[in-house]
Length: 267
Image (cartoon, rainbow, N blue to C red):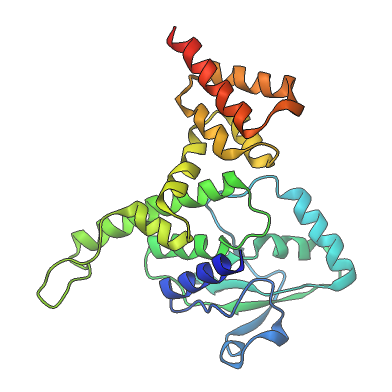
């Protein structure tokens, strides 16, 4: 797990020179290396912020309340990653929930912000956003699936942009060396193999109730992907069967049930 975490952070740093593999959103200001402290800003809570506009996380209100309670005892922990935009505003790349929690905690007037350089393109902005949130401690299979899916379209947009503007990497002989295999780029970025990335993205094709079950971590998310070949009606039946026999539901049980429902559908 630690190797994967370190690999992910190294990839984030490689993808954008303005990110450092030594920095995480949990690191306190006194732990920052000297090279990063020059980028540290203490900004007022009332600063005009722009938060991420791509929805990856849901049901955040409870977590924000919990964070606010923690801040009552320990104060604001960690740093926020953000970059300046027009009109004196800042766009948060990582830490928007802690910023919201700090607003609920009376007495906190400023928050530590590690100022990053604004991205040059929209696809770079998205790539950095997903990279900053790959280390989310509370992520579940559905969040990972959304990250993978959004990264896929982000890398695809990047490739098309570079292709149209003749910016793809080439060797000394002028031959293209930048692959158009987008799923492999997502795999390298997230530190997961292509098969796993594909399986995660499959979750997003399930009906909402099955996605909720996958997100709960109570059931095998890999087994639930077998339901993707079922109609919505049969997926609803699977939900009912799982709810009726919660103690019997194992990975093997789900796979077998999906096969049975598929056979019924074929008949």
